[in-house]
Length: 485
Image (cartoon, rainbow, N blue to C red; front, side):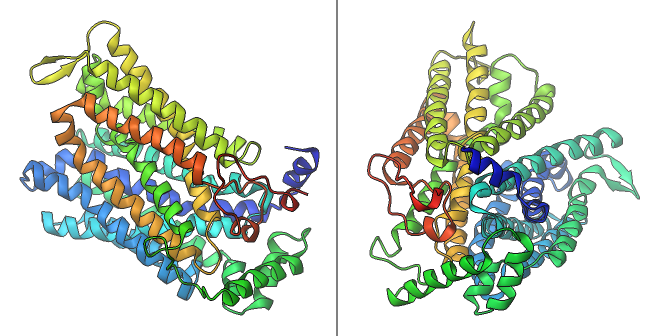
């Protein structure tokens, strides 16, 4: 980063940082609500006498709600605004937390999990869209990365609160307060951040770019001046209006449709980025790590400690992306992450090719156990420092204002569907062959490298309007000119 850029970063108004942090609270709820079920699974299974299949569905059904919520979020945000969408998300989180806490049967529980999924889906779209639309160009990557930092922090908070409730009660299935079991308090704990998120939503200004799109120029100008008083607010307003007018002249008028299999090419880029982020198998590490840890010699009782350690690692490496995303750009970070993930996953596949089967479970002999453990953590580091946060940054940048919320909603919905597919497919794939499974994830990581190299544009240092005009690069990053001056 140049001296001029460093000076620009130093002048970021605290209000902008606050707005970005506040917007990212939705990411915290996203991580918390999607992970809090982990500590309650066994207790729920015993409470309602569930089969393995029904238990798995009760856990995974939230992901289907996430996909639906992400898809609907775009429509709500484009019609009513980013802030109303946040308020709806907060309400869904709150209702889900209370409903699951007082669930009287499995189908009741599944319904409230689905409601929570809708809230997660909304938050997964609105947070990156809002943060990207209120952030100055030279630090947009850093501020947008707060979404992933909030998600990973939410995951950690959920695991930690699960442990505190379970330990206080003597077990997740034991009564804690007012005669309610600890697992119920695990779910109801999400009510507190949901209330905070709802309160924050009432204090935030609407996205200035949404206001311009709605023809509310004076309101947009006030927001621009309040969040970036040292910048040329009138020029920002003109740039957005010109971009909207150009879209109208080209006949697009806010449509997602295009000649590339029914959608605009930029929408497909967002969808494929989202799907590849999940198809490398990251959630296998967070959802199904017990098999791996046991195979390298850990007791099952240690799995929680390892999961917390992994979540902390994921938080820490996110800071690497925050520090670098506006310095070296989006593409180099993604390419590095893809290469690192491919090597780590291929190493895990090779390690499990040497496994012995003991009591029906894989056991890695000699040095292969530590090798697999190190490879798994290298994979988490490479993902957490690259594809985890940077995909959310790009999804907030690459779509034109007229379709940003809806396109981001479709991309996020695709991400949740891919997450669901990976989550439900891992057990049968693992039973078939862990060598094949991790090898498949390695292949997707290698494919992600080629995809970024060929089709993903570099948006570092550009305004959203400039970033939206980029065509996919052919072989090398497109170098912005006026954007960096």
